[in-house]
Amino acid sequence: QRQQDNLVADVMYDEDDTLTGVFVEMRGAYEVAKKYGMGNLVATIDATHETNAFGFKLVDVVVTDHNNIIRCMAVAVIKTENVEAFRFVLKNFSKCFGSPRVLMSDSDASIATAISLELPHTLHLLCVFHLLLNLRTNVRSLFKIDGGRSPYDPAWKKILHLFWKLVHMTDLHVLQDR
Image (tube, rainbow, N blue to C red):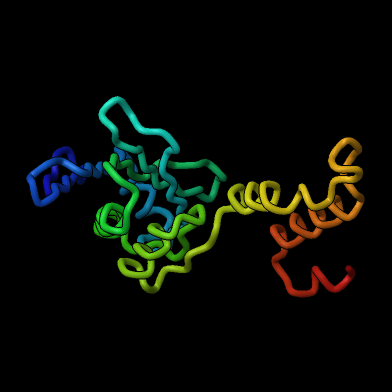
């Protein structure tokens, strides 16, 4: 692990000494974490769908500050989306900023396993965007009228309404007026 200009960087190699990951703390991220509570952050981790020219995927870890500004805290490039690679990213994130209080992600099983191993006291939540995408992909087609030639059944709109109600729920009493 190297420190230069107060930024943390780390690299990961496989057993053949081939580069499989690079982690870099973003400039100013430590100050953001210090201001908003080291180990008290609510963060999101996500990997790109595609790879770069060298076959690596970009992983970013962001937080939203108290002014609702999204701050990129760290980035990494990883060769494969597996538990070992995500543990590498999370271990370095934790070294830089402490374990986040909450970490949101998509439903990738490797990320979930890495979170449970590296950040056992962090609450892992699924990202609203990915939950909605899953709902639309796997449930919406069940509510088409006439095989999809007509608009969606009103029940689909009710399901979406309930989904967003759950998303915005901050109190158990919110759902009682269904």
